Image (cartoon, rainbow, N blue to C red):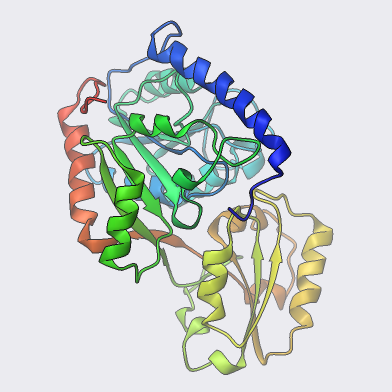
Length: 366
């Protein structure tokens, strides 16, 4: 792997594996208590550190299930400045609940979004304050063994497959690969659209899923650009093929893996400059000035500032952005799709689980 550390870290990986292994053993042996709840609970998570696409997949589930059920999303609210349990609401900021929960709340205002690092307390508070809730989505909850989910979805980035990784700190695994067995569904995310059937079969064989597990490949689907500051038309034309030779794009990202978006935009312009910040980066006024200067220095006739949907949550909190920066800034919403026409089968598995499970019992035998 390209991001693997020094071989001298490998002994520490063994110690880390021992610690996480003991913890999981205590939960598996029911020495440590794991809570079950009386409504369907779906966990979306991964084994690796870094972005595997949990937020767009959680949003996909939220949109799918909200057509029939009252949905609540529970996240820990990574990098928020508050503590304890909080509901998202009007006036909530990324400092209150984190950028990803705020993004989901704004996208689905009819869905309950809450944050709490203590997932058991979080679920209890949701059920107490919103008793009409019909299903709870645990965002990034795979390692939270204090809750036994009714259904678990495990994500792995196609370009950073968990089966080819190592435990922290030598690699990026949060726990050993044998814990893949807790998943009901395995999703290989950010897959290339042109993956061949032979490549798929090789990967499926390498992953070696259990008979009770389903495995699917998903791809990113980029939507039309949306004005970053204020309402208006989506301006799909800014990425049209006709203007490509005169188009310049300043890409601003504060996400774990911006390469898929960068590759997508490289095909849409003749000049691309990428300013990459750390995941969940909190932008400063000085950095906004730097972004503006980088944009102004581009040589293209038509030039735009484009960022991700998650970064847009934080950037939109700046209310003093002047023209022409303001009208030239856009974000690209992100969706997912399934390869090999697997969407219908996946949707049916999820909806059937929620319909059939009034109590939170496992539907598969691990």
